[in-house]
Structure formats: structure tokens, C-alpha cells
Length: 212
Image (tube, rainbow, N blue to C red; front, side, top):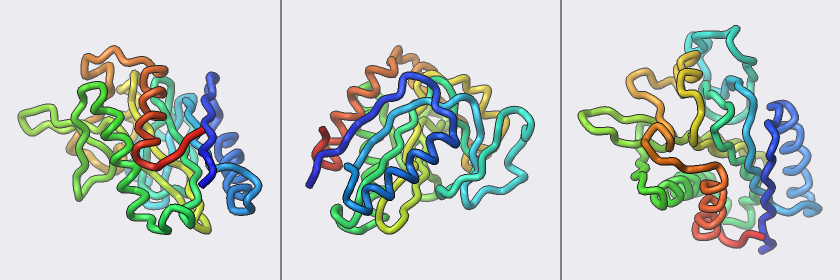
């Protein structure tokens, strides 16, 4: 199996530029002319609407740009202080099992968070990774939204490091009203983006295999 290329963008990446890049890259992966890839980046503030999105859950349509997107799921927020990881892998070489792939994304996030003493958890009725805050409160710390085309994956995960959590109030995040959103810094952990990136790469190798 070839190694997985990693790319980190230091500047905010416009959403449409990211989609165009991923479309080109997954075509190359399918054709055998490009390596699998994990792309770590931040977006400027924006909302995305997945294939299951409900327009009623977009509470502030004029606040930030809103992009219709082909990934699964509902409305999400992306913005500064949130690490987005776009994952472009060839599932034909990795078991051809989409359910197992999503499980591995969850495991990747959970193993990464554990290094920072955060107990990430999954729920059978809710997408993403959650933190139990006690007294019945659970907050989402990471979102997962994927698309697979001809067995090549794109889109991926986002982990809240230090975003402006008030920005999430413009949507019903992932259609879930009864729970909140948190971040590593909100939990009292002074984790930097570089800290998270290093651990994402280490944990990825444990879960998915080789990296470059």
C-alpha cells in the first residue's frame, strides 16, 4: 500500500477551493496517478448543508455564506479555530466497507482526543464525537461527514480546538437541538493546532496504516 500524503494549509481555505481540490484529487486516486491524502486546514466562517439538511435548521441564513455540499449529514459550521481534516482514501484497497471506514474515523478522533485527556464518546443515535459534561449534559466536540465516490473517500472530520462557539448558534448543529457544542479550549485544555495536528498524524497511522 502506498503511503498517505499529508498537507497542512496555514491560510484559511475558501470552501469552494477545497471542494475543487478534493474533486481533482480523488479523480487522480481512482486513476492511480495520485497518492491518498489527508489535508488539514481551517475555513473562514461558513455553514454547510449536507444531503439530509433541513432548511428550518438554518437559523441565521444571512450570517455567513452557506454552501450546499454532497457529504452526508445536515448543517455544520466551519471556521477559524476548528481543525478540518479532509480524508481522501481508496477504500478498494482498504476493505471496501464504508461502515468500517466511518467507524475508523470515529476511532481516529477518539484516540487523538484521549492523548489530551478528553474522553470522546459516540452515540448510536447521533453522529460525531461527544463529551459527557456531567448532570446529563453532553457536548459535541467533533463532527463527521463523508462522501464516497467509486470507493474513494472525501470530506471527513472537524475537531473544535478554539472556534467561536457562538457561531454555532446560527444553525441547529447536525440537527441536534438538545445538546451543545464544546472545544478543547472550552474544556480548559490549552491545546494548539500544531499539538492536535501532530497527534492526528500519529493516531492516523495506528488506525489506518502508513503515512508519509
